[in-house]
Every structure is written in C-alpha cells, then in structure tokens.
Image (cartoon, rainbow, N blue to C red; front, side):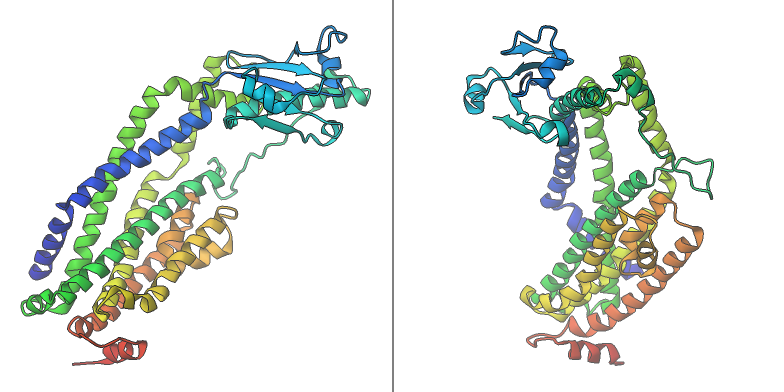
Length: 448
C-alpha cells in the first residue's frame, strides 16, 4: 500500500503542477461562468431600442385599434409601447429592405389574409432581434388578433376574457404528497451533473491510457516494475489521476460560482427586468407591480433550489463519479498497456466508449420521460449507471434502486480492476506485437 501511495503522489503532483492543468483550472471556469452570464444577459436583457412596423394590407388591425381609422398611412397604434419598443402601422405595401436600411425601423412584420386565421406572418430584420424583443412583438400581435377574432364571432371581448383560463398542472407525487414536484426541472439538474461525469470520465480515462502508453513506449515502465508490482503501478496511476480530476472539478465549482455571482451582481438590473419581461409576455405577471414581480421570481427560484436534494446529489455525484471513473480508467489503462502506439487503440476503444455514449443517449431520452423504465434498467447496469443514475437521484430514486445500483457498481469495479490488472501485467512488458482480442483472452487466463 505504501508503494501505491508513492505512485499516487507522483502521478498527482506531476499532473497538478503542469502549466496546462493550471491554465485549464482557471480558464475553464472563466469560459463556463462567462458563458452562463453572457447567454442569460444577452437572451433576457436586450438594450437595443426597436421601432416595429406592422404592415396590415387589410387594415383590420388599424380599424380595430386606431382612434381615427380614416387617417391610414403610418400611424401610432394602441399597442403597449415602452422605452425600448415602439409600434407603427400601415396598410400600404412597403419595400422592407429599403425601410430597414434607412434606419427608420428595426423590424417589419407583414400580415396577409391568412394571418388572421392561422397567425403566420413574416418578420423582416437586418440584425436578429433578441428572444425578448420577438416575444414582445409576438405577444402584442397575438392579443390584437385574438380581439379581432372574438369580435368577428360577435362575442364581447371582456366577457370572453372573463371565461378564458389556461390550464396548468400542479404535479403531486402520491408517495410524497407534501413535496412539490418539478420533475423535469430536477431532471435537467441531474442531466447537467451526468454530463460532467461523462466529460471527466472520458477526459481523464484517456489521460490514464496515454500515460501508460508513454511510459511503455519510453521503456520507463521496465525500471518501475523492478520495484513495484504491475497491479500497484496501475492502481497508483488510476487513483492519482482520479484525484487530479476531483481537484480540478472542485476548483471549477468554486471559481464558476464566484464568477457567476460577480456577473449576476453586475448585471442584476438587466437580469431582473429581462426575466420579468419574459414572464409578462407569458401573461403571468401582467399588471403586477415590479416589486411583486421581483418577489415572485425570487420565491420561485428559492423554492426550486430548496426542493432539489442537494446533499443526495452531492453524495451520489461523488460516489458514482469515483465508481465510474475507476471502472473506465482501469479499462483505459489496460488498453494503454496492450498497445505500442495510439493508432492501435481504436479497435479496443470502441467497446469501452460505446456504453458511455449509450448512457448519454439514455440520459437525453430520460429528459422527456424521467420516470421511465429505461432509466431504471440502465441505472443498474454498471457501465451506464454513473451517468444515468444522476437523473434518477435528482427526481427522487427509490431506496432499493440506489442500493442495488451502488452494490452492482462496487462489485463491477472489483471485477473490472481484476480484469484490467490481468491484461496490464502482461501487456505492459510486451513490445513489437500487434495485440488482438484473442491475445487479450490469453493474457486474462494466464496464471503465471
């Protein structure tokens, strides 16, 4: 065990002191955190002022909305203008390209006779408007078209509004009636953690393989195995690089949290106003004072994160990451020991990486059906459970499934470590011979 500890220390210090590790440890969170803040700010807070022209050849919108219908041409409508968006209307045909290039308008919406029936219309622009801007125009137009359709049916619009109600499910799990169920949102959190496990297992597993190949190619391993057993060398390398992965992951969590917090504080006003606008366009907070909107949003966020089983997820993440990494890293180490050059790894990489890829596909499928049987099955299979199980834990996996999945993972880890060690002890000292699956089977059965 002392020799394994020395190898772990050597591998760990060798990796964490490299410039590439230090650079990626700090650059990764900068890119990831900056991406999160940037995407949210750009998608929710568009500061650009928009002048929107709606071309209505039939004149029905103008007839419905303008105080003096005779004054057709380009007129201000009763749509809800604000500091960032103003609406203009005309019944005349316009040259969309010329109008946009003149700078008079940033968007032009052209209605036709079918628009009043199916709601489809053309949107012209020079630069793509943000989703918030599109949502604002879409929401105002939908309201006016709805008024027009109701009027055509001879129904009083106010009476229609009083009986119009949308349907929203309040999901309740009968096994946990006192808990709020936000299954798909929680599944999304689990999916994000599953992707992280997928990424780190693959990235650092390949590092183990390349490290073994490098030592084998340089004949360094011949010197090392004179002092330690091949099994000790393999385990030291696998565990050492695994600790490097955990170190980098923890650093990423801390640094990304700091960057997102700083960015959220800097862009607080934009984020709040943008998010409130999105909710208003959905009809959730129309007419609600801004402080109440802010409080509602804050409560939703707090309640959602309060309902996430953070301790459960953290424990499961660490357990399944370590278990999954040890299985795959040992297999990657065996591949590295079995070949002399990287080009020869392809025939052995496919069977090892396919379960990882399939686990990712299953995770994507579970986003549409988090509680489906396919997730339960692949939560037990050890080569897929480290990824799939994160979604099951996030939505509340039953205790029996967790126990079975963990037990199978531990037993499988012991088996795969044994299997990889049998290949590693022979392959690490084999040179100049192209390895086949038949050769691997001989190495596994070899008892010398």
